Length: 180
Image 1: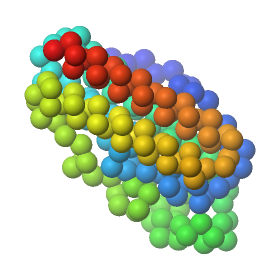
Image 2 (image 1 turned 90 degrees about the horizontal axis):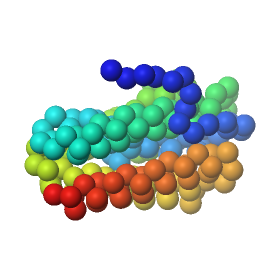
Image 3 (image 1 turned 135 degrees about the horizontal axis):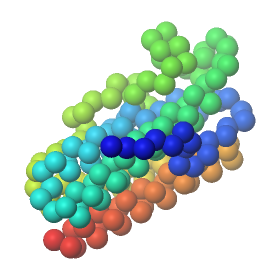
Image 4 (image 1 turned 90 degrees about the vertical axis):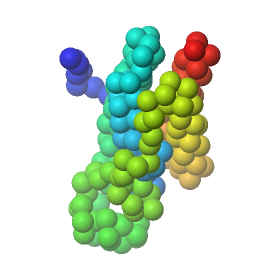
């Protein structure tokens, strides 16, 4: 059972629409190293985890990743709200717009739709936790790349928060590996 508090883990208050920025941030929504894949990875791995304390870590981080998915979705929504057809064209988002209008759709920045094949569930404690550490590092690098491309302080603030959580998750998974 989950209790849902109707607020984001960290506030997302973006003043200026910028569909070009949304075009690559969407990768953290449904891309190969994004929040959707992370949440599914950890929430799926927990079933075969034989150690209750490690199952709890996978569950807690998996649920937190769902919160991050919600935050990234809010970023994308706020960056694309009220965009005109001219804004769509200037951002090179015509294909996305035709298929999804301004809806938030799980895909990579390159346009590929979300695919569960981007994450692994092996059922082996060390293999899964090592996969999780690698996944957190890949997500961190993606956030680093977004920060390099971004000049909006409202977006940078939220992306820095999300990046820091990737580092914390990497550390928790590393501690879990060391405990076994």
